[in-house]
Length: 287
Ligand code: 2AM
Ligand code: CA
Image (cartoon, rainbow, N blue to C red; front, side, top):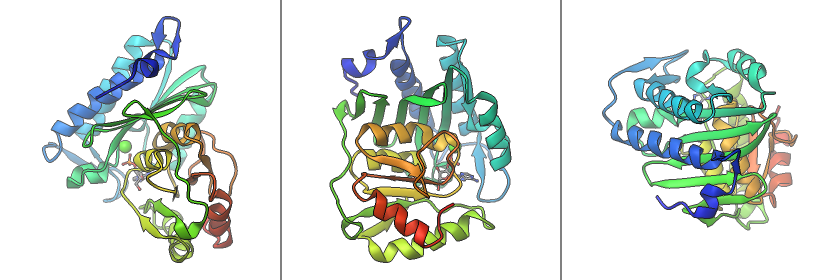
């Protein structure tokens, strides 16, 4: 993995670089996760057969948490595997820590279903928020050895190269991704309404199964836009900064500005944002 000096050394505060530590954690966890592909020992079901966790998710989170807290013992930590399943528990966990001066927000494996099935599209997502504002975002794809890094105000990089969002100006020329939520009462119907409305208007639809990587792909200009219903802070925090620092727009599906509590996300190259969110709202696929 190639990380430029400017990338690793630019946010040194108090003698330690937050970004360098985040990169190191994501790379270490990612390499370990990759060795476990097709080789995990234990699959547990959380709330439903769609909601999975393995010992790899838990082990990777433990590794990241202990590395981060070794460097920054006074910082707060919010990780998917430390929170009970379901939106109420997620909201409560976020509420408890969101105003901390420094809060690390971690999804050790974003795309666990893919990991379990051996579908090679998953990522490690690590963000650092200061008083609720994301200041560092790192998404690492271990299968392609792609590291996406953003620092607030300093741009976003992949393979050490500055990223920028794509140039499409219309929905008709857009490649748009979504995620299919598992929750059948609220999230699935809302997503399907959106899909029904968006699919006929765009160049095509993709759905890879890792929200954090989809956000990174919007930042890198590989996707025009992405939306998904029912996500958590750890799926989105790092990716949101990647998109913003690459010149894109991140809101909820109704067009309100992104914050850590957003669960229904719309991210785009900015140029199509109004038309994109407008189509979701018109289809009553936004809330
Ligand atoms: P995960 O793999 O970390 O759980 C795929 O559509 C996206 O939705 C992934 O980012 C995935 O993250 C997330 N996801 C999967 N199951 C979920 C659930 N039960 N609740 C919320 N998000 C979920
Ligand atoms: Ca996860």
